[in-house]
Image (tube, rainbow, N blue to C red; front, top):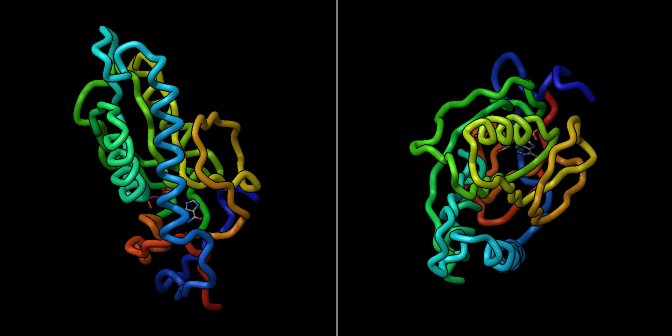
Length: 205
Ligand SMILES: O=P(O)(O)OC[C@H]1O[C@H](OP(=O)(O)OP(=O)(O)O)[C@H](O)[C@@H]1O
Ligand code: HPA
């Protein structure tokens, strides 16, 4: 697969799509979010200042990546809060897929961070790592701002499609090479509102 192969967008607009099958139910996602939050709590408990015990180090800053990770970020920060992990939240918005199912390979920053992250422990929250191009770009962009540490937490990992090697410290689920939607994730801006994660089937053009 190349990044520039034709996407699924017809000249007249995106193809019609319908839900094919549910991959992860609302309950399965909620369980995974709690599991990830517990792992993150344990790991950051060892990090001075990021553990809420009055250490003198830097606080934890969660950076949610819009739009796809808006639901996951909202759920994960509340799960961390329930475990008494103090944190701040910021967002970036980036886009590379447009209305296609293949990445354009060009990552555009639509919104950057509101506050500097220099010296902070940063946890980047993404919905999905597919080719890895977006996450690699984001890691480089954030590391250039000199945080105390940077880790990534990604709900879905599609390893078969990876084009670049990029570290992901926390992965929710590994998924097969299928286009997925729901729980914040879209196809051509549709289906973000679904409480579950599903595969879509595109109608023939
Ligand atoms: O690993 P990659 O192949 O780079 O794909 C992953 C990226 O693709 C999606 O973003 P998209 O460009 O669709 O924007 P969105 O989050 O606003 O839906 C998703 O939210 C990730 O950011
Ligand atoms: O499977 C996907 N669904 C929606 N957006 C995506 N961006 C990369 N992979 C996907």
